[in-house]
Length: 373
Image 1: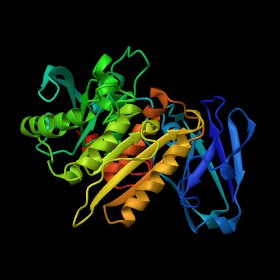
Image 2 (image 1 turned 60 degrees about the vertical axis):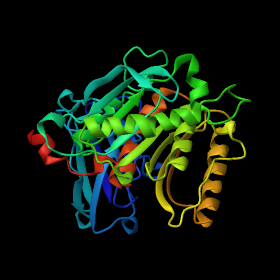
Image 3 (image 1 turned 180 degrees about the horizontal axis):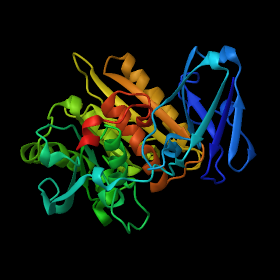
């Protein structure tokens, strides 16, 4: 079967076709289109590889670079019978790194406190809440994700760039995946390493990770649950971060599994614990915990290897009936240790952790309530 594509909007990115014939893999080298000129492309796919009713979309190498209509909005999946033998397609626009972002879906950003008191450490910290765009016109209760290194998550002008989670949450909301409250905790500046190291004075003299974890779990979470419409149970509570922030989030999940069921772990600093000596507790009934692991192959020769070894250790603990783990591990061959790549991964992690969906939001119908509101 032959698929042809015309697109007015051109750039250097290759174009792929994806669909129910390749489990919606958006960057499948077997399905890259051939260009006849800058605007016209085609691909021929053997009949035996295609179902009778074909659903498909075009991407420029990922869901963050998927096709859009002329208004910059979601396109429905294209559908055609295999018996038709050929399909002629037009794509008006393309996403670029998840953009464009629609202002009407942006989260409401509130400062919980410029100086939230941390009794465990006897210091203060700035804390934000990012609420779903329709929080104040709904009566819903929401799951919560606690994230470290807040000043690198969404603030313009961050020294190393930022994750743009406000923009990414707007994308998720557009696809009906935005019902999550994010609590963002500013790091401790010169105290950051101490606070994010659990118990290793070789790395941080006077490490304070135990106290920091207790702050989030015993002080901040009760405050958030009291002042916002949250789903308080473990099934709706997650914690995460990148680098050292990911490391302290691993500790949080393992020490307080009755509180956190979802861990967002980006480029974790596992070099601090080369032997994976994380404290584990024994439970009569193991806690089911979802872990989204991400790393980039350009982060150094050992990042990906350490993630794989860490995953193997978790599987061993699982066999001992300590935990019931569910993993999603994504390794980006081009990924470096930077906010840009964590930003790219954030929507995928949210969708998998909180929506139990292995597909990307672009593969589902937009949330009608979100559109009508």
